[in-house]
Amino acid sequence: TQLLEQSPQFLSIQEGENLTVYCNSSSVFSSLQWYRQEPGEGPVLLVTVVTGGEVKKLKRLTFQFGDARKDSSLHITAAQPGDTGLYLCAGAASGYQKVTFGIGTKLQVIP
Amino acid sequence: KAGVTQTPRYLIKTRGQQVTLSCSPISGHRSVSWYQQTPGQGLQFLFEYFSETQRNKGNFPGRFSGRQFSNSRSEMNVSTLELGDSALYLCASSFAQDYGYTFGSGTRLTVV
Image (cartoon, rainbow over all chains, first blue to last red; front, side, top):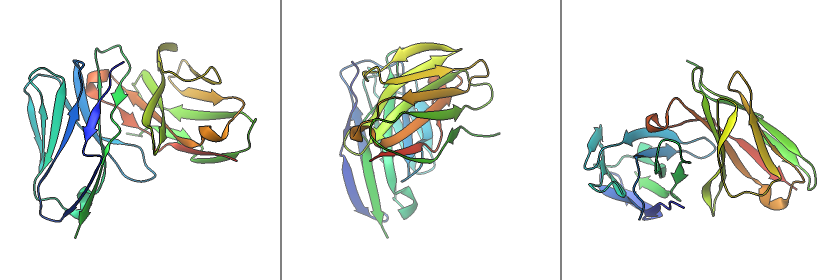
């Protein structure tokens, strides 16, 4: 069973602060995705990383895939209230195995 | 293009009843996966269908079943409902796993 551990589970910060969310596993993943979910809606895909050491940027969000493809991080610069939501990481060991989700990081950005 | 459509959005059932949820994937996506989301457990994998075949199955009892039709639309069924089945049920479709999922808005099931 591939388990994805996310930390922290809860984060409340002031607008303008920076933050980093971590996603760790003892398993190797062929790819890893990050999603953001708002209450009452399904998760929305933010990014997919597939290469160890890969770094992707999406405006103020920076995603990194660990060299060993066992972990990932999401860094948000100058957080805004619109960044509030549940951030989920997800991955699978191969293209034909089930995709496992972490428990999520609930982020609140206070104006 | 149209997104993933799940129906119904909300459902209230009583214990012991059964329920069928429907999911229409994005056109061209042949993989459909179902997840159960609860506050304490997060997203738990139910099953994945690809070209009408169940490709992966999670650790849920046999009361949970699903199927996929030739047009890639999928249904999941839960029989003999229990209070603990109350959850948000999410359907997701993908072209290929490395491309990530597109999720529907979910069906909120409440068992009373």
